[in-house]
Amino acid sequence: MPVDPSLTRYPPLARSLHWLTVLAVLVIYGVTYLEAFFARGTPERAMIWWTHISVGLVLILILALRIPNRLFGRMPAPSAQLSRPVALASEVAHGLLYLLLIVTPLVGIYLAFLRGDAVTFFSLFTIPSPVPVDRTFGRTVKEVHEVLANALVILALLHAAAAVAHHVVLKDDVLRRMLPGRRGEA
Image (tube, rainbow, N blue to C red; front, side):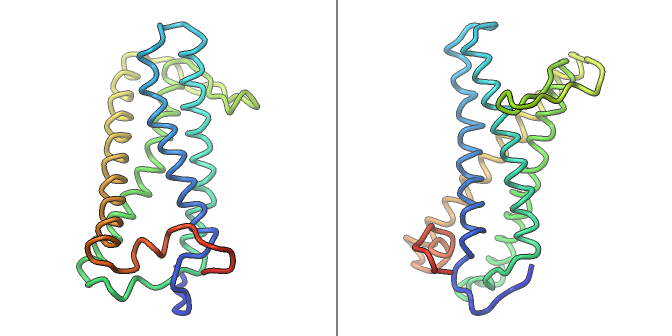
C-alpha cells in the first residue's frame, strides 16, 4: 500500500468503498432475519434469498475494487496517535475483516451450488451450478457459512466499537479519517 504522508484522511474512493461495504454487509446479514416471517416456498421468502445472494455478489464486486485500491492506491500513514501495538492490532483486524469479506460470500455461492441452485444477480444474469447436488455436504457448508458470517459481523462490530472509542474516549483522529466528508478533503 503506497503511503502518502500528505494525506490526513483516507481518499474519497477508499472511504466510499468502505461505507458501501458496510451497507452491503448490513443488508446481506440483516435480510436473513426476515426469513422467519415467511413460509417456505413463498415468493416473499424467495425474495429474501434473492436479495441476500444478489447483494452478496455486489459485495464481491465492491471488494474487487476495494482490494486493489487498498493495495495500490495512495493511503494515509497509520495515525501518529496510535501506539505500535495498537497499530499492529489494527492491521491484523483489517486483514481478518478482508479475509472474512472474501471467503464468506464465496462459501455462500458454493452452498447455493451444492443445493442445486443457480446464483442470480438481481435477475440480470444467472450462474448455473457447476457442481453436483450434495445436500448432505451442503448442510455442513451452510454451518460454515453461518459461522463465517457471524464472525464477520462480530469482528465488524468490534471494529466499529474501537473506532467510536478512539473518537469518544481517546479523542484521536482514527474515526475522522474514514468518515464521509466534503469534496476535496483527503
